[in-house]
Length: 133
Image (cartoon, rainbow, N blue to C red; front, side, top):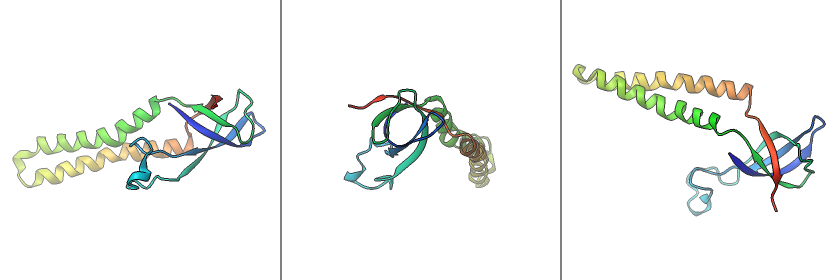
């Protein structure tokens, strides 16, 4: 995954502190509707700086896509699959099927919370790969 960022500071360990404008899943045109709440949010992150970018440079950063896809599967797919499995397997119980499905959904959220804790302790690695002209 690649994104544009602005170098805010050069760190002594060969890294740079960057500011990245947060975009929504609807391709960043939230100013048209303003519905998602991510408009104008700036993320601060640290990236390897092998190209020697300086403060104020606009750069292109890269990170692996696999962790993002893994997180999406944990957060969205697993709870829904467990809800459907719980509901469909307990349909003969009548009104209890929805409650069992909801329980499966909640159990499906536990790995998402664990993964969130893991990401906070070990944030994704970013690397500056070029300058934006």
